[in-house]
Image 1 (tube, rainbow, N blue to C red):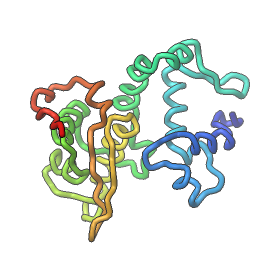
Image 2: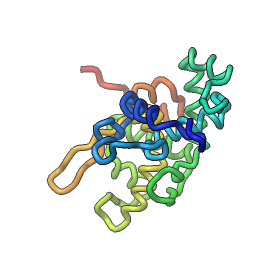
Image 3: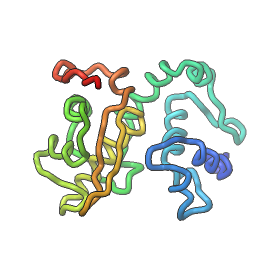
Image 4: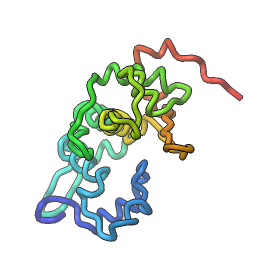
Length: 203
């Protein structure tokens, strides 16, 4: 740990190289910066904050160590998921580590239940935004900041939690972001709109 209780750069670089994080590959991270601090790699910064906040880890004499509870949960992935992910998705201020302070209008129960249906067979980021807010917006429209807030504060946390998968495709005029529910979404969540889902097709 540094004197400011951040992870030292040598550990940050290890995390960049070993974390399999959407949109944060080592190649992308090191493309413009050869030296990366903890605050410049949000996945590690957020994970550090979560472990401290949930008392799963603590700082002791210049080192970061798991607590007894953290050590036990590290051996039980299902219990760790149940402890970590709801807190991360529902309690964290996701705008705090986004590029902008804008926050989307809405509530998590509505977002989750609508995404459950709309993304069941796959959809796009723009189509999801329109499903919630009625206006077709995209990163190339005048209201792109609203799209950015929705993406940063709703879709990205669900992706980082392993619940959504995103792929980006270059179109003739713009890049299209496709959104799919991950196998983890289907196995871990029980939502009010589950009875509206179509059976998965088997080919």
